[in-house]
Length: 133
View 1 (cartoon, rainbow, N blue to C red):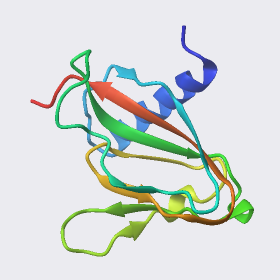
View 2: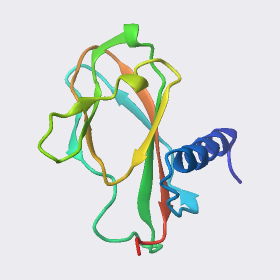
View 3: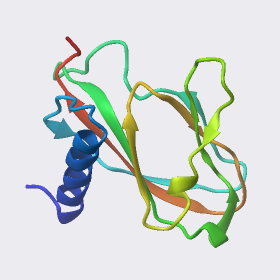
View 4: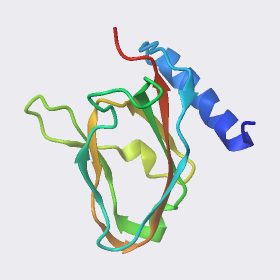
C-alpha cells in the first residue's frame, strides 16, 4: 500500500504535470530516495530518463526534488539545470527553501553542485510510464 508521503508526491507530480502542460503519461513512481549531501559531496551532470526502459518496460518521465533542509543549514549544493542549448546553466532558486518542491522532465540535464558547508537533505522521486511514442 502507498505511504502518506508517496500519496502527497503523486498529487504534486500529477498537478505539476498538468499545470506545466506536459501531460506526460505516467502510472507509477519508483522508490523515494532520501539524499544526504555533506561537504564535498555532489551529483554531477546527468538526466534521469535512460535510453532504454527498465525491466517493467517503463521509463522515468518526471523527476521531483523536495528540499528538507533550511538554506541556513548548508552552503553550496545548488540544484542546477543545463538546457543543452548553448546557454549558461541555471540554478534552481525555487528549491532552496525548506519544504520546496520542483518537478521537471526526467530528460532535462541537471546536477547538484558540491556542498561547501553543512548538510543538505532532500527527497527525490521519479514518475515512470510507458516508453515515449
